[in-house]
Image (tube, rainbow, N blue to C red; front, side, top):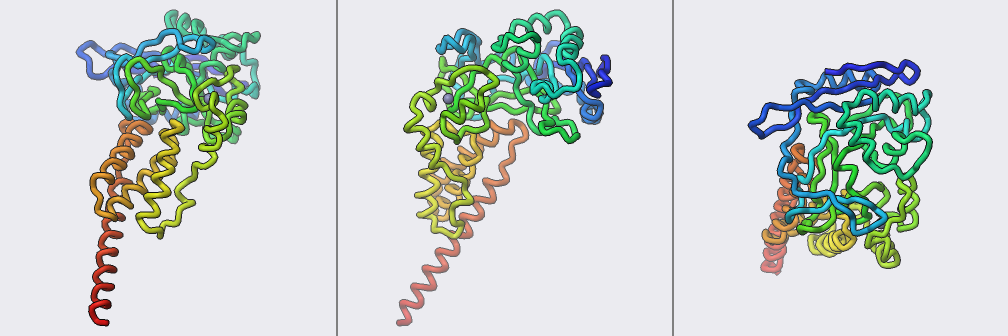
Length: 367
Ligand SMILES: [Zn+2]
């Protein structure tokens, strides 16, 4: 599966992963090559995944997006919806052009990063290399490939990490299309890296009308005030002008009011839960923060509370939010067990409330 050279000084191996490409088409599977700097243990882990190199990427031939100039001229190109998208819809599934460990971007590599990038780009085929070097470099430093990675790199999550004591053991990938998606502090899309298909999957996290620009978040500090969020974006060297940053006075206050579910008393009555979690979901949706865990936590609480009040139509509204959130965040690995548990909890509360009413009616009848 992999062929390449090793760089003993960093214990990184520069390899070409040769993977099957597309499922769901009549055409014979074309190979898809990803050039990577991986340590041997990560390579062994990938090779231990059954049928890893034969696993096909999802078919996104009829891509529901186009890449064109962003309305924010400073942002250059951006990705736009070419059709109406619903929460959870797959926008893009794409293999990286290249993958490197995150620590290389921070300059903590023991070897010369320029040498590593020379080896990496030399192993790319001609088309991948020209695609890679056509990506933006907002750093304009001495190492162009390093600047391209810093400008366009997307973290590949917790499933692909090398088991050493580095402070940041993650990997970063650069993509032809996904790297064109601009940032917003109110993103309408989310991504996750699927290890088996070795694809980054981008999905809508709320309905996106045709023609709207698709945004992901480059920051993991979305609840912080605008000024602090801006500091977390320093690697990308742009000033965020999204609606939340442009209206920071209102947005900062709303974001400061967003709380996790543990702050709610689980023994509270369904009416109290509906008031608190209903307001939290409203704030999260006003701020365009549907991607956060708080959104699904409060929606689950609302499934419990509305089921407890035997209000099945409102329970179904929040059940659908949870279901689509799971699909958007986890793709084919979505898990709906929590919905069933929430409904059962609601039914138990409803039964207990009926019991309480019956007991109080009996005691009233006796007096
Ligand atoms: Zn912003």
